[in-house]
Length: 463
Figure 1 (cartoon, rainbow, N blue to C red):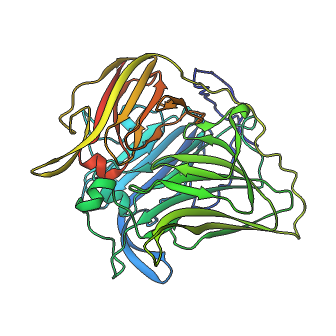
Figure 2 (cartoon, one colour):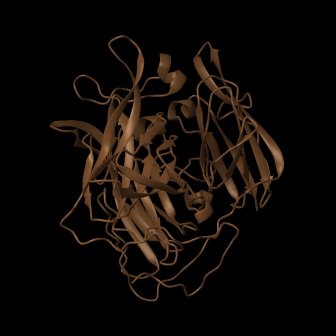
């Protein structure tokens, strides 16, 4: 039995807090090793993770020295019920400082994992306990915010699933998470060293090996007749915008970064474009006897023409011997905010070449030498993000969620609340938020090399 609420408060973002009446188990999410909840009580999900370097197998028959959480990359699957207290003890056994940022969660700034103000990194040999209450259900992920481009590429990332209550959660035959990454390997199988030279500084670090849940081989599974599954896609790469198609499958997009959508916003899709850091929630059915999740990448053929290459990331087959499913999929109609108006704040994104190399800027400034951006709490605000350069930028805000309004003046068909939006080269995107979470928050491009080269700033939401 899932928990029933003793106290239910509905905010503008449909955030709900709940204390279960009796001990309950968490739903099964397939794809990653689930961490063990150390606290048997109903109102706390408690975990412990150790960050350490370990040799792991990513490509069949080939091992590599990687940074890991508990010897795993991706790290263990962390789970909780919406409104439950989450407590995570992190011990750092690396030879360098690290943190854990809980990407997409609207929690307190002190628990956001960004080193500034009174928040310090976890030094080698030290431990820190993160504690927060997730106000939204959905699919989130975690990664360092110290030397992020290096530590994420080295293997430090994982998924955090916050489960909905019964009246909202889809009824499915399987719930699967796909943590998708690419990694740049040398000829000897080692991870290539950090570099900002050439096209890496310009477009970010692209890998030569695609990974799903920490392996190069596609995920496999079966589905019963009339079956339906929930798929959670997470793009954890340094720089690669990912494109997915679904041959042999009937797919409905049912949510994004901020959780599940209203029914009116859901739609059938043949393709999903997923920027770095973003997530997609999908309802998946077979359209025959087999189907696949395919990632589309661009490559040069023998004639030096740019062509699309389709790479299987998951293969799903019909289990004809199983009983027909009676799962209904996603039928709830949860309330969700849809921000639309406010005062306009303009952010210009560009880059310049200097004597010391390429710098990426926000409003002409390079992190950490950026101007104060102060906003009163609960201020409706439209942020006009103007990309004045050629390369694209996945724009990410910590601690807040937003609606995407339009692209170059054309209304955007990008429903639901998000924390990451892709801003194409020489284009302008307008988003709207209410800055309802007080604190000092990072705002940056989620191409990790762009952030390291200066495309970051902060917004302080005053209480």
